[in-house]
Picture 1: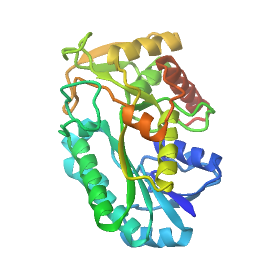
Picture 2: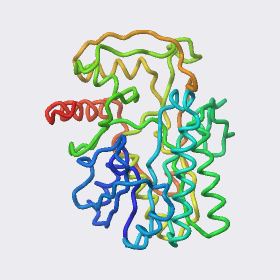
Picture 3: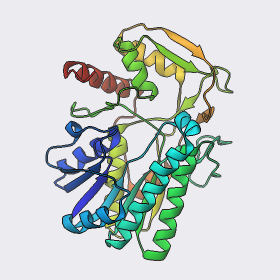
Picture 4: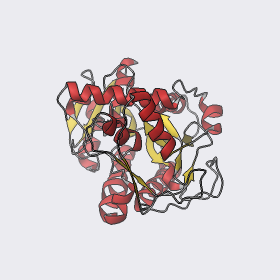
Length: 329
């Protein structure tokens, strides 16, 4: 049996592929490589360039490779972009996911792990936010993720598909072994952008809004190391394969840092100064959102190993240096 990873050439997906192959799993990756990279995929995995929303092609691939589990990362992820291009996000996230779920049901796949987002909560009235909090996404990105959660729940009820929807908070850092990291040029993740500024790959960084109701006026987020996030996926897959019920769970540490605190950490760890420009708020951004990770701790026994902002920043900076050395950009 094998695991199908969609978007396995991307940031989080490539980490997942490395972790699975490290564990001796047979892995097949489907990625259209519009934002992912073939070189980021672990060499032990089988890479298929294609559209994971193509129902017939995915059904054939599931049969050919004996796929018993799918981990679905493929999709578009930039909140402000989703506001300006909502139909593109509903196509890339919702419609493609619907096709993949149909292929999974047709192909008899037992387990489906979905890359969801804290964006499904929108502006939460309380922090940390639990999985039982009201769902009120404020962007097409968040709504596209919630729609896929609904489709999975309905498919589970109708067809017995076991699934998990993992709601990510802010993912950052890179593989401690230096094998993969956030490699997309023009990425918008705060720690990625600040790390590029620290290494003079950018002229500086813009802070989008300083008038939020937070201690320093900038947005507060729960930053999770990508290796801890991927370990949560591995634990989730083990959980589903053991016959446990479907699961919706937050993936975060339960505490947050403001934009200015993150920028200060990047300056401190890198030893570099870089310009910081104050800009207007971006559409779709919320003031603060921090995870309650209680459910994933209790259900999976998940134990983070990299819950330290300086460590997250250090690994992100090391990856930026590696990209420089490899002449990626």
